[in-house]
Image 1 (spheres, rainbow, N blue to C red):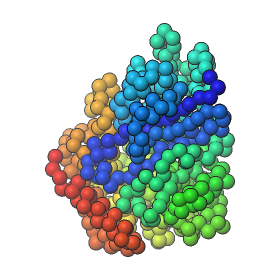
Image 2: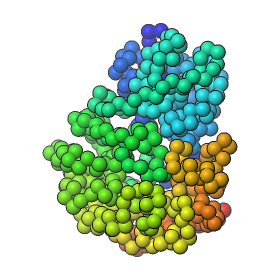
Image 3: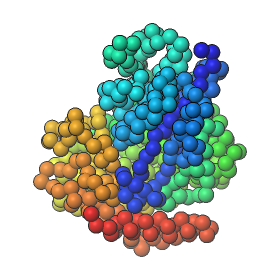
Length: 483
């Protein structure tokens, strides 16, 4: 087989099931991981044809595409909440053509490969980062005997027996990865939520991979095994130039798990932004830890055009911060928020309600603590036990989760707005109470006059006003609905 036809798939995501009415205004982000895999395959197997199908935005008929494109291999990315969608897509593929080699990757595939490889419609599961492993699968598709030599996969042999190959080492560097294949996705069809909107045209970018910290609720680190690797600044700039030249972006979302782990590198990247005039061309947003900030660094980011910093506060109780192994203090939170507020950058805080052993009094203390800080936006989420995390282990130990019998569609940080109960809630608490608390905490934060005026000051066009009104309507409707 000389030319290989490769298809990468982002499965259907019923966003309103996970977020209720908020799904109508929630962000719809491009599948960045698939674009990296696509570019790596095209670089290393130049004779291959590669396409991406994203069920979130793709208007093509999927079954018709498969019948016409006739892919030799299909790779599907799978989050835990999308397990059932992934299995459905696999069945569709095999129903059209049994010879298609169906591969599944992503966080869930890495942590619980047995959930997927047990399906008769899935041939192999990739554990860990996908670029090199998937490329090897494409390369060795001509001879299935070579599957046993590919590290990082779980597969079925000719006798239909499940084989688990050794893990594949995490690449120490990512400078050999080409720029993502952005030409394969309709970037103009994705959207950002109104609370993060600071422009009319946005793009996402990844400047580093991984996070070296150990929060008990985070599943992202499971894929990268707490490694932290920096992308070359030249590659980052190349991608930004692509966005500027083709899409005239005026907002950039940096989706690193933690943008400021390496202070000197952050300074260098900001200096490059300033040198190229990016601070005058677009706003940008990044996620940071409060203990990685200082006044000089924040001012440099402000000079480079940073408009929003997302900070994980998680709780207003030091006992709970210690329990979740966040590694920060209440005093560090106050100091960092003060520095951000003084700089003129907007702050967006992430806070978790319903942590293990959390009492109602502690939940209220966290909410009041958030209200006392000079933050501009907040997201109160519900503690959600993703597979492989320490929070998952706690939920299993407490009997809240049966790992062999679970409704994966209930894995939702915004479960307070959904019809189903959250998967996890603390001892001596009720799920309905946690859901109401989440909705009320978010609602009363955003209904404060200072926050409303802050959003009004962003309005530049009639489109901005229309988006804000629409967002407020769905936010209000989602909050007051009873379940």
